[in-house]
Image (cartoon, rainbow, N blue to C red):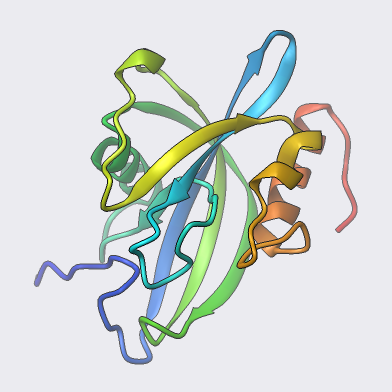
Length: 165
């Protein structure tokens, strides 16, 4: 098996890519919040946007194993991965690929003070409550973006609600 790089800029020329992302949540002062890193401004695909952390799953790799690998590679953190709750597709014109993204509930199991950002990947991060998501929007990604819709569903499910999307 050839090890193929699946970063967001390596050309895939019409290939389909599987991506797994984590809705990493925790309560801060009694308020449920989600962890969102901001992509580096040097990225060609979606520069300077907040996103759910995760990445491309290697050929033959279990999605949960791949998601754990991506979180470790990008942040030096371990996560406990729960159930998937949202799936969507998108096209990456930079990579020339079609992606299927699966979003899982997750929580960090590593100490938060060990979190390390890699400047080539992310410039900063924040913890956002549902009503603070507007502060994570950018010109390239507003509240109507499918990933923000997924985050609202994640918050609703954590409250025990059955959201209609």
